[in-house]
Image 1 (spheres, rainbow, N blue to C red):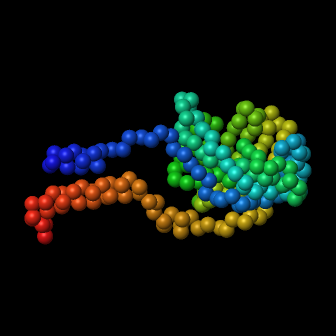
Image 2: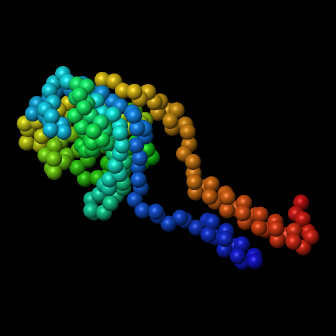
Image 3: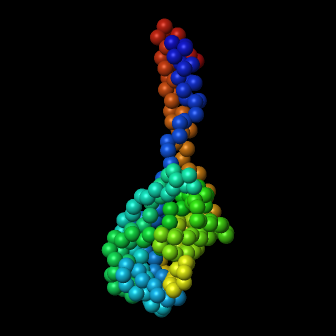
Length: 223
């Protein structure tokens, strides 16, 4: 029995096997929305609708999709949850529950997501205080894009895109949102729950309980 107890303790202390690529989730809930002023638009279309300077674009989170992101070797580096939105142009619905690919008004912003994102080809990720600066190039879409993202909740504060060969420019500046400002300091003060430590503690309690049971079977009780 003592050998079994020792083996159990060894299993407790053994490193956990990797569980595969991480999955990063959005930090905002359905119903969250962000409205942007179009401060520059040249040859720009969204969902088949021409965008003009001075217009407003509103993205209301209606769903999401989890997509893989591949690293330099072609293997899946991680999975990320991206927003699907009802989109309004000047208060007129132009897309419903639509993918916001390469616009992304909301980002996953949990854990080490930004470090993982910065490891991908064609992407640059920098931190400027409470704001994350992201630059990306998509040859598939013939676009170069730049975002300024609030690190506390993943809200895009500013977005710009231009065609790699010219001919298209779009710049959006956050006008209003129903998301309250979040203090990064307060957010960081809340320590994440260490599930591994909790599991180990629970197993240790089980082992101790087992030893106590063995000790009391013969009529001897530990003091």
